Image (cartoon, rainbow, N blue to C red):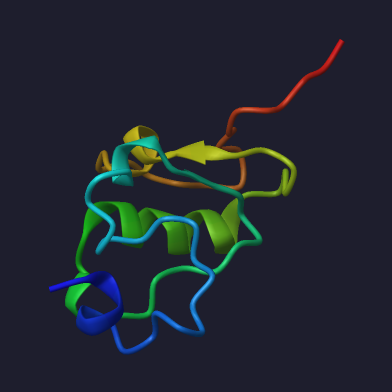
Amino acid sequence: MNIEDSCKYFKSCSAPICPENKDTLSLQIFYPDEPICKLPLYNKKTYIINQHAVYKQVIDRESYFTYKFLNKKRRITNKTKGNSLTYG
């Protein structure tokens, strides 16, 4: 079964971390202002719970969070820091 068949939100979803895309899941990153998977099947996954916490708590909206960071049980606060893209 492909992703389009297994997720009713697939055509309208723009969540950067898609639980149905298992091949690249561990390579994905998440910015605090980005959408989060709405498929109820995954609501209890640690990385989905942490994405919601980052969305609500993190002040630095320019930082990003890796799947590896999000997939560990941790307390997310307004002092939680993500990674930043620095050029130069």
